[in-house]
Image 1 (tube, rainbow, N blue to C red):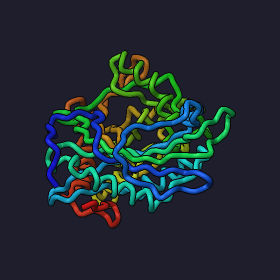
Image 2: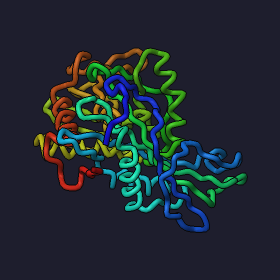
Image 3: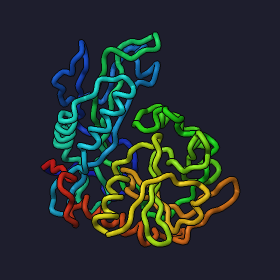
Image 4: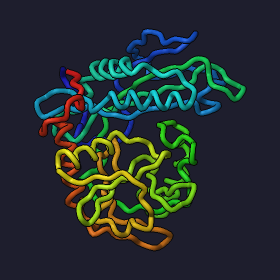
Length: 341
């Protein structure tokens, strides 16, 4: 497959329309067979459930070219399972997990010319999403839904290396106890927009959200989970029922324990102990791990010993090992890599 003539090494993290997208419709209590289509536009009624009451969920994942030339995705079965959980929480009909994975494969194959070449630093971002599409004026779930997947080539999250970022403790809450923080619903991200714009205006790269019940425990940022490294090299990640169960975080913790032989722990992380950690990072699909050099709490700075110039040594090993697995340099655990072609 001849690749598209794009400047792969210089494309940004922005939307570029590709040739095909997958669409399936739910009506009269069942999903249709689904198909790949050309049209990137969606036509819906002005009173569609997604527009009126934010009944929409999504996933994010990537396809990339490995060193030996294969196109692969990373653990799509976990994205499928997480989307089922998200759909159930918003009273939406789950899209079958096996069909989810098959649809990802088909849409990536159809857009193989847009999968960046190995070594470019770019990837093909995959966005599965589902929304209520029929008119809903009363506050209730929709009756009809559409499941779609589009793809877009994106550049590396960081240009010129992953420099540590500075984050601030937010005065806003990301999610409520017993709310929707544990699912990937669009409404959660809408909640974070004002907070991130405010953080950027104040010169920070991201927010640190504390638990809304007590405001004493670290939860996550608007779009990533935290990992911390203790001074004796234990990898710690916050536990909470309002944190999105990150697939990247789960994979990092496995790598830490089974590939690097490190002790790992998922537990409550109190903000008071953040100053005692040696390293801090944000983990997610976009950058795998974004190192954090400094946390600012209303003018009070917490500076990690790893500094503001580069990743800490343990974070770097985690990053190198996980990306090595994704790119085919390091043997992956069984089932982690789905080969497209």
